[in-house]
Image (cartoon, rainbow, N blue to C red; front, top):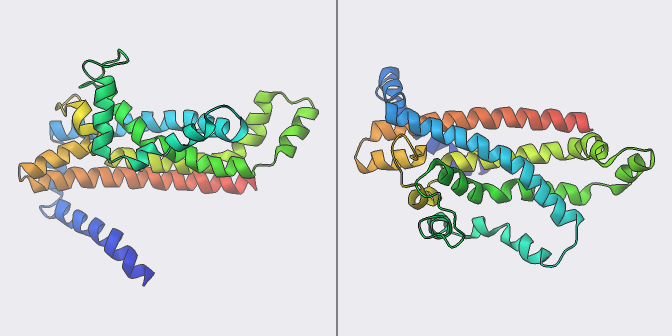
Length: 250
């Protein structure tokens, strides 16, 4: 029963996409992927996704650390706000970001229709993944080991580098993998604030949508297939790193 459920929801759609993308043969698939506009959209998506997950790995871990180890006024509110990107429909998130960081910004920052807006939108929707992956591990991490290392003369940096980070690495990698997958496939939050300018701010998912609207299904399927392959390769590599890290921690 579980296999049927997974097949219906995951394997069959992937198989259908692959069949559609390759239906015209390798030549057609390659031509659609290497179309200058499509290639620019794919490159932008993957490059910004890598930048976003790198920032999430650092700042998501720091946020999780503060939420677990520190006490401060408004902690519960901050902890609840972390999940806001999960609660908001992505198109609403895009409207919120456009209102805050678009023309007439109340904070004096206008990044609308720039590549920075792509990164900003993806950072917003992927923020919770690393934080929520790292928090449970931090809760379970025993302070006695850190205290013992400190008592033996290890500095704070050494304690973090030699004791804390090895234990957190699998959780960080897991959060990064989820962030990358979400960033590659994100659509709603990008539509408004990026302006979808070809060769500048047009992400892969938006390009796919535009091709579907223009009834160019081979191009939409080809770019979707390329993004799927890229996501699977990265997720596979991160899964390997996570397992390797877990074995070495033990």
